[in-house]
Image: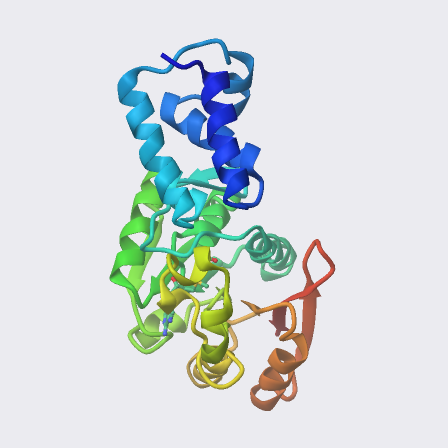
Length: 294
Ligand SMILES: C[S@@+](CC[C@H](N)C(=O)[O-])C[C@H]1O[C@@H](n2cnc3c(N)ncnc32)[C@H](O)[C@@H]1O
């Protein structure tokens, strides 16, 4: 039977010949997943042989990667904010940029705790997908109340599974809703901080995305609507203004594309003309989050 080293060499060679990015990393991740070990273990034990059932399994994974399926879907996991989340093609693969939403909520909550004198804090996420951001928030902030929605029942199943795996299922309420439409007014009246990483790609630009994205990630998680991809965000802003205006709401943080900073600010200015608005940059120095603070 071939050793781990031989498999790594062969698989990486096939990925390289197919001009896939990072062929060695891909090969190492697939072999590690096949043998149920960490990537570091694989490198340290490359004399070990694979069993024939493992060779067949590995071949299946390689075929999927060659067909441009994202690695995260093949190995059914993605790291986010120090957690290992389950993902499959029911949800967008969480991106590292979205960790900024978690950080902004943690900072705002710390400021509010100083001011609000022990008032309970309610955090609402719209369009939670795998649950990445709200689950990270629930883990970081054990005393806040957390509620998340998605329009996709499939996505909510994945979020539920991740909440259970991360030990916060008893605290996280998940609701199917089109933006704020299906949420009770009583619930919205309590919200202190609202976050969302809604789809923000312009419909006309979707076809030009990487094959891994356009052929495998759910289009309901990509298509932001309108001509500029910001239609869902605009609709959400109007709904927030209309339904979350009793003075409890203290912060809104909406993720957007790196080139959409000024357009998102302009959209917010139309609705929240007398409010402090800013664009927050991500670690790469790119415009990433529209912040509205009250
Ligand atoms: C870009 S993905 C982000 C998922 C997750 N928040 C993350 O950061 O990984 C957008 C999510 O919004 C959901 N969505 C799309 N349209 C929606 C709508 N009208 N109301 C609520 N959720 C929506 C999608 O199903 C998808 O899960």
